[in-house]
Length: 225
Image (cartoon, rainbow, N blue to C red; front, side):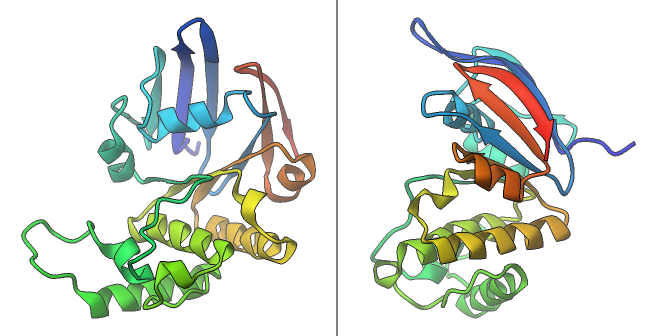
């Protein structure tokens, strides 16, 4: 039997009297796209920030590839193969695409970035996953859709096997949304797993194999598409 790449067990997160996540449990399988569907304030982003090490759960456990994920440890999440593309991008506008993606990934003993090697790898990832962007362009010159591609490439460059996309279509044109959906199919074909956060029912039905519905911090429903 195939083991899940991600297992969330009884995760609860409180902010004072507010229960943002209430004993949430689910599994993510290899090559699967799960959609987290819910209105604003349902607890979707809070849960993903727990998985990515930004928040510490008050209760519950998270396992990635069969190993417990230390709570509140972003480095551990990255090392475990989890990547996240936030609604608000974390790119440096005055740097190039290559620099945004590759800086910080080289060995601490390396004094210089291998730009030629990084450029070749970025172009390979761009081609393999339909994420067209020129490595030497400055981020300030990119469209919003292109910036999102850079964020996805940054996760893939760090060998992410689980990709979390937080409301990814909110900033995209219809054409860019269709291109993103094609990229998701390519990711799944390569065995990656995706958590797609949205409040748009038609989108989650189009891209996911399974939909989890969050309401008031609770997992209130699940269905296959």
